[in-house]
Image 1 (cartoon, chains in turn purple, green):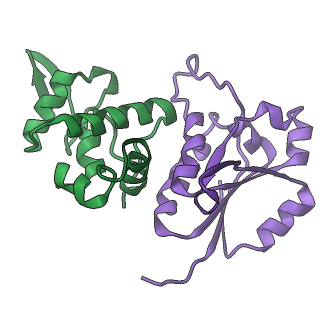
Image 2 (cartoon, rainbow over the protein chains, first blue to last red):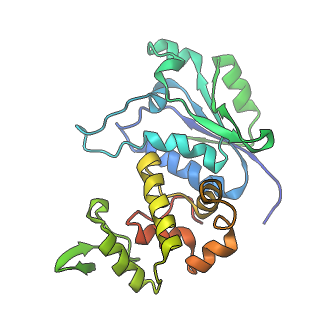
Length: 136
Length: 110
């Protein structure tokens, strides 16, 4: 096994339940997290809906997988970039999103927010900084 | 493929994970444990109950290293360590305990 740590970014652009992309992406993130790489996840366009609070999938007959985002910290996935413009365009604010936290082992297990809201320009910088980008 | 619990038929997949998670019961857990050659003690049940609570909260069965880390946090390092967890569940704490707990195969177990 190579010891080189690469920066992986998983980009989510689709709403959570109309297609299988969102759920599959989350599954890949969780599986990929086993490989000790530097993993971040980005949410833009309709992808920001994936993180919204109070999802109810009963009528759709699908599994509500949104609680799983709160487990990402356990998998050491602690950077969830959310694009401000995508929120604005959909009338959403940070308050509409789940409160997702991780425990910082290097800081006496203090709970810190995983969601980082960035502008479109900053998102471009985040992407430019990656070794691998996987788009869903 | 199915388990038989007091005459009720509980379907499972080719690896023994039950198909319909809502059909789980403590009795079924005991039957799966026997099939897995595990003698369920207090600690085994504690892990199984922990997994069911984790699934309830996050809707996933955690990978083995996440499970052991979380057990360490909630039950202490004398239970939450690799050696002890593999003593409890020799064929993989996450895989075997999830099967007994009636959960899907863990996500992120490679």
